[in-house]
Length: 478
Image (cartoon, rainbow, N blue to C red):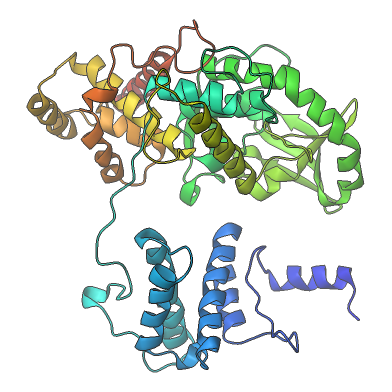
């Protein structure tokens, strides 16, 4: 028998990444080829752990489909792939949509490209090649971004009633049994106030928000990279009102949750990254992981590492993540999905003629990012040119900005703030900037923080302008 220590040493020696898919035979428990070799190629490509897991599940599903047809993946034909597509998009209990199939089709195309071009197990792919090298299995229709945003009244209803447990008249609902309403309300304010993606705001660490530096902190700016899409670094600005929205959670709920879970974390300390020192100026954290002393830059810490990062407090070990759940560590994707589903059910149950009109589809956390982008874009446009109700004039203004105001173009500012790799992605938001139904005079007032607070999207926008102008000045000086 091989010991656990020997297994760990072997994995380290082969430099296998966490999340690498490994396929075993149900009876013999021996590795299955070419599946495992392909999984190793994913590991060599240094893909994210979540991505490798998802790719592994897709190939496992297709392998099961082939087995039911009395074939294997190496003997797959074009008819097999089309039959699999029909099962996934038509016959199964919950058919997938074009976007999900596009991901699966791309993965299968890559897998058979690997078998043909990299290892030479096949002379040709099972599906005829598409024109100009395109994936022949991909959906024929090009998918547009599903941009869904909230009006002010809708957001307040979502945050305070759905997540926060209030009644539509703002009174306390004594029957509310939701867990951590202050956490969920604070998370929604942080998401809306920064425009971060779910994996970015849900994995924020306390030091990144200035918690524990020894003096009060309001506006915060930090860099997100390892948790960002494609690992693309960008600065995140957290306005004062988003920080205030987190205060009830940080002062009331979180300390009790941390104290309750301290003993549980103590039992798991060998599996955790226990931080001994935090250098707030350099962004470095020092601690012990797997029995070895480690030093990490916070922006370079991926979600998996952040989840197991803890530090010593007066009551024992405590997670360094801002948001924690009953186990003492940060909630995962399924937990945040469960929170928003529960909020949606509550919003629907309490809706009447006096409550805001609900979105046509169940809301997503990502809708807050879209709302941030659209409100910011509208606001920056008005700051640059004032109010122009003429839609034709607005389109002419966009073209002018792209040609002569690259640094101060609202579209490009928002694109940089969102971390889009291509401004064309942000360009799709322009379709919604003339949405008069959801447009109101004070677009950036009263969204985050408590009622009566002077929020703050104006604060965010002015900060964005300062950074862009400062960048232009620095460039001219160089």
